[in-house]
Image (tube, rainbow, N blue to C red; front, side):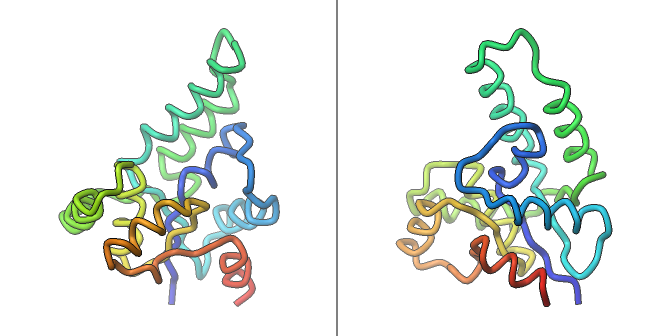
Amino acid sequence: MTRIVVLDTSFLLPFLGVKVRGVDDRVLRKIEEIATRRGKLQLCYHELMLPELIAKAFSTSLRKGLETVPEEAIEGFLSVSSGMFIEVLATTREDLEIAYTLRMAGHGDFFDCIAYAAAKSRRGRLLTLDTELRKSVERAKLDVHVFMDQREFLALCLD
């Protein structure tokens, strides 16, 4: 049985050359390994989150005062967005309904709502560092079992 793991943006940014505090290098190595060999874990990213991914790469480049976006960022983004690296999930009605429910419950970040909805609607797990998202889901009395931390991800990779 294939298990679906939706990745939050924090876990893809390093593949665009953007360092993210708190992301375990072991997790990144596992993501890269899984993405290249396909197996029991299906790594996914929602199509509606693609603008967040490239926007953060642009912001990092601007903050560093770079004249252009690094080639690594462009290549990484194109690899993700094309589905060559991980599966890009198409938007479903259920994604939108779940995301809107979470948004109406008070969570202000659209991309977080989509990430949560993508995992929830596909009966998968969401690998995220975002504690505020988890708190919002708890307050809204929605399913928190969707969340997965890095320790759980690494353990799942050993199964």
